[in-house]
Length: 136
Image (cartoon, rainbow, N blue to C red; front, top):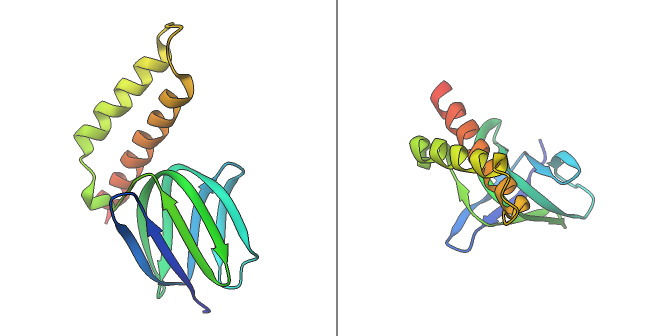
């Protein structure tokens, strides 16, 4: 299978760099799969689990939103944060999910709805990735 270069960077670190077979991410328009020789593309990414296939094996990670650029057989994800499933503190993620749900259910006029919704999505993605890790 043809490969392409993938790099995932966050403000804190270079999270991943390598040659991969495919990449699946969640963008504002839905799930997207990138393969070698994909047409040039730029998209905003949602907080979610991403799937990286490398040498026929799947790896999963959580990103907390960001952007992807694919050009000249190279994908770069600039993420707000990224974690491997084994790095996730499940208890903390459950607490974040509970806090985000409570904020969204509150009838407070001062709530930043979009920020609360993104926190809910991030916590949900972290728990989904943790579940993937626990199934291995």
